[in-house]
Picture 1: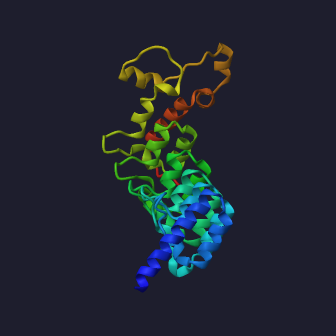
Picture 2 (picture 1 turned 120 degrees about the vertical axis):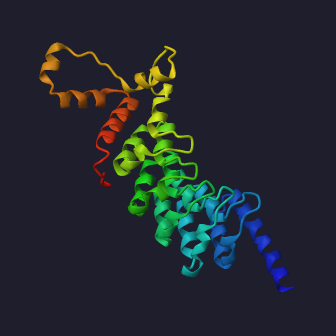
Picture 3 (picture 1 turned 90 degrees about the horizontal axis):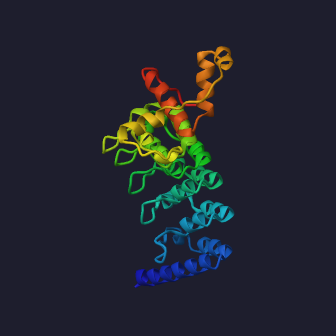
Length: 272
């Protein structure tokens, strides 16, 4: 009998939490969760998430801080509750690139950086997947580098480098190569390396000429600029190469950097 009453009460709280969130009455949400600690565990039927998920998605930073503060040390597993995709509140904060919320949540429980969703994606992976460089750097600093494949690779074999190149986040791809150099040689379940994905990106540069697959690879990796004879004489090979890289399109820069990484793959890359 008591259990039935408690269940009915919890269902009533869920409805109230959802209505308050929809009406942006976040102060009432905080009050309800303070009065009823079990509300932090409640999965809101209409959203399939906890109220903390909803607050993170709405980017209510102060509310997130208050809700997280309410969670006692013995109830930290509440922060590991996932939504329908298995994403924790930290996954969501990482995907929208909110460093303040990432900091707030991990300060409560640093182990959350290792929680995976249903696709075996960590919060670090989510930050890279959505091109959130600041959140990526913050979470990188919390990961165990010796176990970096756990954080950077999901179940289909794709790594954060695959995803950054696939979505054309080339600046983030540079950063990933610097921090996780061995991902250059990573292969997904289809046998594709990050360089394969880079070579298949016709949208990364301007061309109106239809090309076959082999020509596309060559075209992606070759960039020609006009140089006067006196400029060639003034530039050393190293300076000339650096100038071409910096002035070339982003996909060329990435290709050149890949080449350098592959040539020195026998030398371990230290995280920055």
